[in-house]
Image 1 (spheres, rainbow, N blue to C red):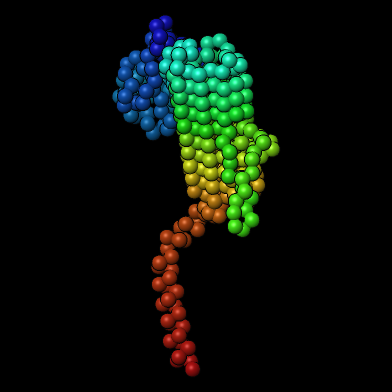
Image 2 (cartoon, one colour; image 1 turned 90 degrees about the vertical axis):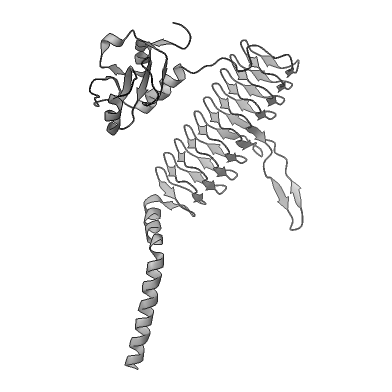
Length: 348
């Protein structure tokens, strides 16, 4: 098939979907798009059954739906999770060509002791230090700084302007977005009441396989052992991860979250934007942390917390409802006090 085109049956195979009209299996598909933008050579998707009416009139050749949903007059691809299928298909159409071309740019500075595997691309202005090892098919964009003794696995993408500091270890299939700093010195100081004394860090950072780090996120190196981001975790833009934190497998961390030192986050924890974590606490597996939550103590497995200080999510919602009524409650209390004083006067 020409580049950027797939047969529908290839998409069906990768997503495990069930096509309602088998005559379309050999149709050529050029992409995936939303209902309102899709053309006749593309597929689309809906995530809620109420969108089936809107999907009737879309131009897409076929629409991903949840198993059991139907769209009158439209070919469907039934899957367990249409949004998951969307992610799979979008990756199938993603352009993986190096942004600045194949090979190593002439303006890149590569130390003679660095080991660069086959099919690696390195963009203009990038600096690669001594003892660095870069795995197969990894793409390094422009003006990236990779300091000495860094290890980067296969099929990674380090985007323009990222800084990977000395001794950092990066697994395979990792994405580090533009402006991210991995292995920075943390806020480690002793204070005697009058002045600070800097504490050097002797650990590093480990990003395990499949991790993605967002733009302008900073991950500090550990004091003696590594700060670790476990396999498959997703960290959004503008996140701060302090020294010796451990972020568990398949965690999702939204933008502007801050982790103080030695915070331990379990597996599959979902953290909404601007949440803050006090140091030396543990967050249990499969828990949820609401936006702007202030987490100062341990969170149990599968707990759902919000607010500052963080508490049970449903309790926090009840408190918020009461808070909305506080002006009226205040007036009622004021009136009741007045009535009580009047009754006291009559009794006395």
